[in-house]
Amino acid sequence: MHVKPVASALHRAVAAGRRLTDGRSGSPGTLEGLTALSCFALMSLDLPGLAAADNSLSGPAAAAVLAAGCSTLLVRRRAPWVSYLAALLFIGWLHELTLIQFALYSVGRYRGRRAGVLATLGYLAFALGVFSVPGWPEPAVESLSSFLSLVVPIGVLASAVGIAAYRHDLVRELAARRAESDVLQAVQQERASVARDVHDFVGRELTLLTVRSEVLSTRARETAYAKDFEELADTARRAHLVLNEIIVQRGERTSTPGVDGLAALAEESGRAGSPVRLAMDPDVGGMSPLRQAAVYRVVQECLTNAAKHARGETIEVSIAADGPRWRIAVRNGLPEGAPARAPVSAGSGTASMAERVRSLGGTLAATRTQDAYEVVATLPRG
Image (tube, rainbow, N blue to C red):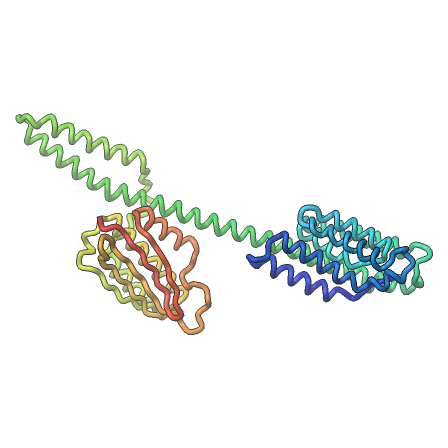
């Protein structure tokens, strides 16, 4: 029987394959090709034994047969049972156990636990039947010992690794979908928040416009402009009604504060251990209420993320006019030994912050240097 201790080689090949799968440079086609080549390289080590055995295969013919068997791994992702059946053929004909390891891994990896277990049981039953065939080239006792010590562990290990990889892929996909759902929900909540702010701020202005129009209509009742003022008051009332119909005010939360709330926000951050240096342009109070709400949300999210990832570092917040736009910059230092990833989370909070800025025609960008992290948002001044 031509069996090699290839369990460790299989483990290394599987690890290399997982690294290629996780890396962006390893495409599925490339991975399948490398898997087939790896299997063929391992099986080629047994070519002298195959040529010497009584199986009517010469060296070149044996190499061709092994290459044909390994080529079934090229479709292992779509049809892993093809390589599995070829591997069983190799066991019965050539007494070759290398291909079955790759086949069992592939079934478990791409078809799940149930298929992996069934494939393993089928392989063990088939191999046991082959070992029981009269005329086996090894003594019965040695054959049974080899079966229990090598054939069984090879199949169970390969299938278990494949099933574990399958479960890992499921968990990773579930986590990705959950993160995507969280971001989408945060964006939707932020849009609802913007809608409530629009209702509060624009609705207030429309109310004032309606009242003022009615007053002017009353004063101009005996003049030629009375009808015009009445139409203006009716238009303002209709606009307010349409606004109420489009944006349902549920009242579950209050409107987002404006720039007047930044001082309290900075004080709260300082009490939590992250001091804030706040610098605001004197004209910042002239921003529209919606822009003020956006500024507040940007600063709030940045302070929250800085407290999570750079606690104790001073946070510099500046709001200044930059030509036709407002520039909001939040910068915090990074502690020594900070991870290479950006300290500001790329999760739902950041997504909602960027959504609010974009909804007002602005931009938001984050930049990481060796010792600091900065978020810069811009908003039109109009």
